[in-house]
Length: 380
Image (cartoon, rainbow, N blue to C red; front, side, top):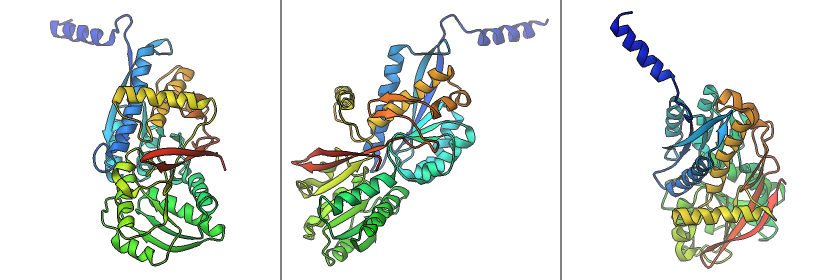
């Protein structure tokens, strides 16, 4: 053998030979907005996932007898569907084992096709559009309720507890905002109440005077908004300026810790009612609250909304890998579909579509600038 060939063979053998006790690297991707108006919600997802990654590394988790080093790759989808697909392809090219994301339904749906084509499991900790799991991809899961549950129950609350008879509906024309508004309006009409106005804005809007003035003329009891807190805050301020006294009802995109800062003194007490697409009761509350305290100690601020769900998504991936004895997506995907995991957000198991079984939503209001839990509604 010539010297060059000997050197080449030696290098190859050194690359292939794993030292005793070597770790297998398992890379988990996150995809969420880390820039733009929704960055605080997207960072919440990244931070929740990073807590799980660090805890797994601290525990020295083994899969198939091999010690694992967990690595997080966080990507910014800017809440944009086109960017979301680019991010999805980047994560596929990076050979991540699984993806936690996306936040917004708009990027989640087109990105899910890319993950499905690559055979990479995806758990969204936030996307609520029914379209996501209705596509039939075996790689698509979520650990939150869908808009079907949220829209129905927000409508029931508006008509029942709030006694609304006349309702105005606004959405931001995103897959999430419009989808949730449609579900809400459908339930309102089915229960005999009147939609007095249906208006549209967009997810980066700042001036709502025209649509709010039109709505004010219809004297609604409730204004429903399908969208995120970055728009809802200024909208509430302009409602106050225009003297529009209606209650404000919205989904989990609005139900954040930052809303009091965004809305200022327009928030009021018992004026805003919103739902988070998950919820715990009884003994499960202790684990949920303990997570919130660990999160606060680590990052110096409270959970916004989605960090616990991102944390659980990572832990569910780890549980499926341990059950399958492999971190290869093709091998642990069947275990993921049948997983049963007790997380900080409650009991996690998936139905055949990838939706969370026995899903819940939690209804909140705001009092003295603080989010106050009202009730948990499950699976109705």
